Length: 100
Image (cartoon, rainbow, N blue to C red):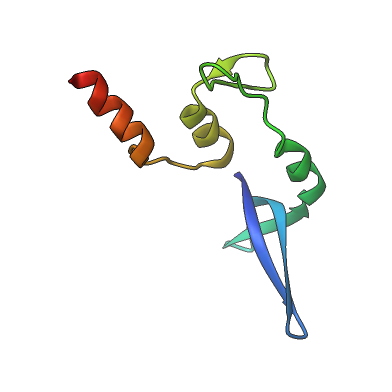
């Protein structure tokens, strides 16, 4: 199993945050179930991924495979993030004016 995660590391009172790839590999040894846990610092790669190509009209996001997705689907698949939806006050007024 592999997961991306943001990890906070504390050292002598100071804290830093890194992006990590966490890999868990279960195995058995002498009839004991164990897990090998590998944590890789991918902060530099994560920084590069922060630049996301997005359409300025429809707001779809381009994936690494050159496919275009709704922004919610892209973030769910790549970062396991969910969105809640609502209207800001300006858009609310515009939409209400359309209904009138």
